[in-house]
Structures are given as C-alpha cells and as structure tokens.
Image (cartoon, rainbow, N blue to C red; front, side, top):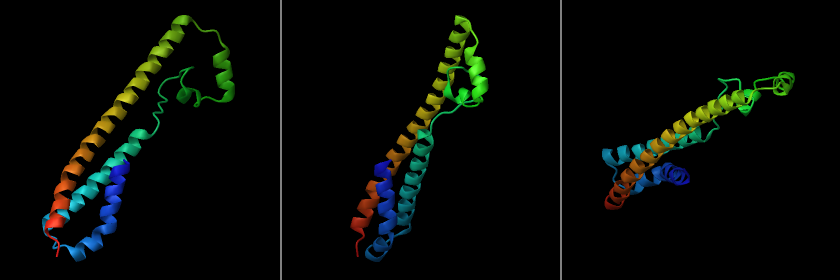
Length: 136
C-alpha cells in the first residue's frame, strides 16, 4: 500500500510539471489516469480488508463481537450459568467457522489488491518510457 501511495502521490504532484515538459498524447493521459485510478482502488481495498471482522450473528459466550452486544448484567447472568461441555464445543466450532469465513473474505480482497497493484506497475513502466521518450 505504501508503494502505491507513493506512485499515486508522485503522479498527482508531478502532473502539471509533466504537462509542461512532455508532449503528452491521449495515451499518456489515459495511462496516467489508469495508474492513479488503480492505485486509489488498491488503497481502498486494502483499507477495507484491514478493518476488523466483527460478526454479531450468533450469541456466543466466547466471541467479543457477541459479548459486546450484551449488557454487563446480561453477560454476567449468561456467563454464570453452568453449560454443558457439548454446548461449549458447539460455540467454539461456530466461532471458528464465522472467523474463517471473515478471514477468507479478507484474503480474497487482498488477492484482488495484489492483482490491481501488479496491473498498476505493468502500466507504470510504459508510462515512464512514454514520458522519457516524449520529453520536449
């Protein structure tokens, strides 16, 4: 994400200078906009993927997302009641499944971000060559 931020910031900051020093064709402008757009999209996807997974769909006595939905009194009452080992095992399995689903979603987002950053740098190399070859 840091490298993408650097590229996007550099292109945005250098855009007026590039216009004055380079004979920019439509392809150069489109390439630059594509690199900037892909960089911004990558940053957004990485930020979304880095947010914590907070599912509140089950009433668990182990998962902080579920516990935070209860009042202090509700939690004390529910956690104070004796539960069967089987109930605890079911609760654990449910939480493992929920967290695994959240993690799988994050990995899909990060894979997409990795693909976008690869495309961004594949477009960035020709952009540099076009700028160098078209200097005034």
